[in-house]
Amino acid sequence: MDRIIIFDTSLRDGEQAPGFSMNTQEKLEMARQLARLNVDVIEAGFPISSDEDFEAVREVAKQVGTLEGAPIICGLSRVGLADIDRAWEAVKYARRSRIHTFVATSDIHLKYKLRKSRAEVLKAAVDAVKHARAYCEDVEFSPEDASRTDFDYMCEVLEAVIDAGARTINIPDTVGYAIPEEWFNRIMKIREHVKNSGKAVLSVHCHNDLGQAVANSLAAIRAGARQIECTINGIGERAGNASLEEIVMALKTRKDFFEIDTQVRTEEIFKSSRLLSSITGVHVQPNKAIVGENAFAHEAGIHQDGVLKEKLTYEIMKPEDIGRAANKLVMGKHSGRAALAARLRELGFDLDEGELGKAFKRFKDLADKKKEIFDDDLISIVKDEIAQVPETYTLDYLHMISGTGIIPSATVRLKKDTEVFQDSGVGDGPVDAVLNAIDAITGLKGRLQDYQLRAVTSGKDAIGEVSVRVDFDGTVVPGKGSSTDVIEASARAYVNALNRLVHPAGGQKVKEIGP
Image (cartoon, rainbow, N blue to C red):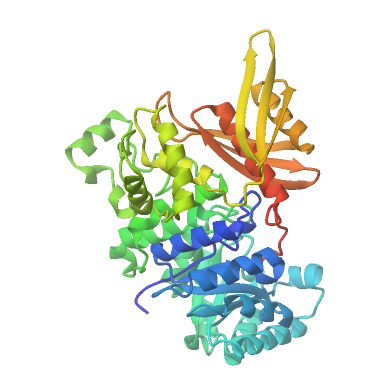
């Protein structure tokens, strides 16, 4: 093969990380963007892990997987036959479906987790692949914890599952234990020792516990791997997965070295990164490669002088290559609905009339407060206003009093259907007072586990975007809200978390851990 297959697992492995949980609507939105990014495979979830995840994978298969030129839609399963049945029920609607089945093969996992012999696990792997092949031709198999698995035994398992019908064999560095040179040698040896390896695509799935995920993935490519499993922004279990944008841009920028490329539309990378951050409420660090705020920034005088004379002096990529450009004024107070809708489509949002109406009202309110409205402002207000879960509660009114020597107090009014509820609260600070007032209205007591505030754009009139994680009697839910008033943004984020709690799709999902 003359290119690398990009297998995106942001919606499965990435979503399993604490704080990154996505509901069905959010997975659909992200899957549509991944399709625009032109990844080869979308691993949409782990269907047997919960009814909601099953529904999410099924809807991705139905709504994204049926589009012209859509990526392969993949569902993860353990080697249990019921897992495989459930995965197929979810992905079967797509034009191209894949079942990805896995089982741990390291002696550590066999002894302490599975409590099974090597022979038992080998048989289970073969039976699982055969069962999956009865549903579809595209079957992938992973020996979990491959980097710590006895090499000869792993080769025995791989050879057997290829004979059973696996068309992709994925080698996971599940705990991020491998070092690039060692990983290169292991992938080379697999190609040499697994006699039928030429009948399957060789893949790797690298975790970042030692900060080596991207380096290990690139080493595997040099050793002959032709599928890379990765995630947007490198999200995933513990320290995360190999970062899609770093791998893709390394191959593109250093094509002279790797002599191989992907079919990813790199101009969609930045948009994909920002959309994921907006959905999850978790933003990348400023110095993150490719998509961080400082990735194309130059402050040192020597660097600035060089870039002004010739960008190639300090920039090995162009911002335009990943779809990134300097923020600029795109909309104003006199802009109409059609202009807003067109700009939002460019940013990846295709809203129906009801959603556009809500977004337009919020946009007009913002235009009265801000002289300059940037793309990031638009993304923030749309993500805040277009609820990802039904709005059981909406913020109708907020008034608070605070200052030096004054006990902060707040009055809040919420709407629920056609009813209006109002109450007051006091607290250690203005945000605490507002949240206590909301608790008094709903009768639910939440405890903030995490609170993050960031300015979406620059300037004193910048939108403040608040992300929270709230513990409601043992159920942890995320929430997001934005406003030019940070107290209002905090209230919106808390109400968003409440809506996730009271809606059946809300709350943190507990899932099995995959490869």
